[in-house]
Image (cartoon, rainbow, N blue to C red; front, side, top):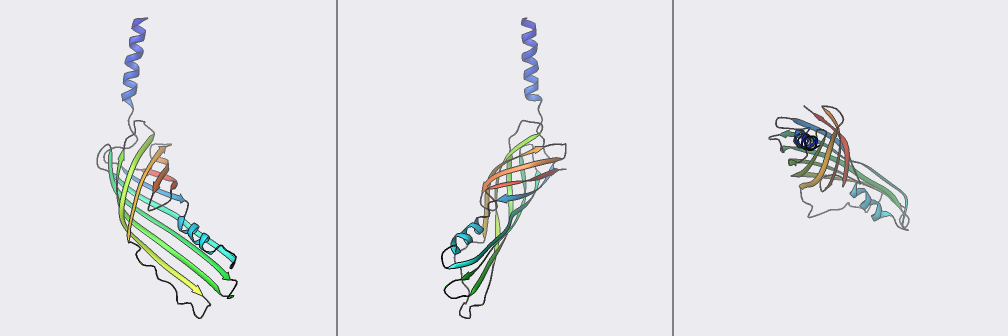
Length: 196
């Protein structure tokens, strides 16, 4: 009985340390994901949804994210995050009868650093820190002859993202991704991953 217990303990010890994480030094990871919610779209909708607005139409795309990562060691990676999203709102003003259409396109390009801390052979949990450039392009259309547009001051061209996520590899080179983060994308992002 004692020999059997000793054998089981040794087997458990080796099984515990026998796991290999699904990513390692020299691997290249490419992710594509779609995020939720598009916060600018929610802000636009809240700004024009009142008794003075009719025919309100709100639209959005994204945030869409593409990420590239190179594993410089077993636990650390460096890479690049590209993000894209659009938000738009159009409405008729009840008082004036004029039509207004506002849209904003956001593009982000951020170098990133990540730390991987998994011990599973199929699940890769990680922390990400990214900071870089943000571009915002505003467009408006209106049939109001007195409408001169708008200006927004103080918006920084800096983008950042801090997040926690995980990839579950369903095969050697293909996985599913989920990330929770703030800044530079959705609060939640879901997507696919490939590993080379």
